Image (cartoon, rainbow, N blue to C red):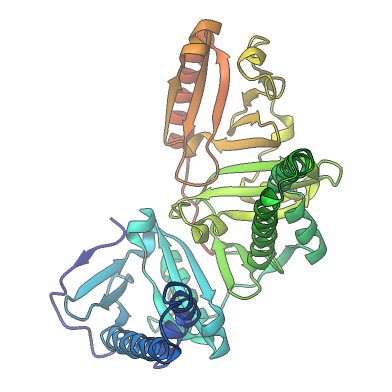
Length: 445
């Protein structure tokens, strides 16, 4: 296991480190605005003085809890080089971050923490949400030093005096997404198509029936679209992708900034997607499944974005960095049988799948065209599904199960008589690939 939660059997060592003393302030500051709006919305009939008193009490209690949590938190490296984190006020827990199984090390800078010069360190491990450890908060310089220590421990880089290398590895910037491209891509996403369709329907209904009430819904829908586009823009603002010996480094964010490292060998699957309105621009999006990111939350979803928008040629060049030696355009794709169009009339012509000695490639999508790439050595399992309509048409779908994330590879509507053979052949390729696979190390020159 990569993370163990258990009662602490021994006291933290004398050289155990502490979080920054202003951590309680940053923690409480994160909830000031949501608490204020909650009191305004849900206690609208209560007097201002009472609401102010409740607000102050909540902040004082929250500050006390945050201070107690800070006071009882410490961390250190043990004799094996693993990171130990002791937490808990009433019940003490000690978590172990096994650096040999480390998947990524992220640095988050929420707005309030940034104002006072703090950052949160997030070691990401196999096991998804259940294995998360958060060090909230350190100074930005201390967070960077600790991140480098974790990477050095993971790579086994130790100096002669037993200390780890704490200086960051050099990097080369590969891509910096222009702000105008990011803003336009957010407006041209699939949600825009749906919003326009709904808007036209509401306007027609209003003109025909003379009832202005639906316009309120249209205004709300438009507000939701603007909010979603603004969130997308703020999340991936100033998106920068750089290459270093410890992996691909990502930095992005307007209000809350994030620094992430996608290490070599942790990428389980890749998706190249293109919303239909991006076609004339020649843009695509690059997403990945990374071991350790569960992908269930918005935060995890951000951690699986490798390129929010970029020209296709540039995205393919980045794909070569993630999966060296893989040329997806050279893979021969076999289309689904013509009768698949009766089952999927809109995307039937696009459905195809193929493979080479390294990867399996699956093409699909309608309003958003997708191309999924899965290395044979990274497949978790394979399965065949067949619904009633597929059974009537002699079709079946082949699923390539990966780790949780945005990429869910499915070769839809294949010939039912051949899909079993495709599965068995892929099992053999995966077995051979895993037998020949050599784990990649971080910071390898």
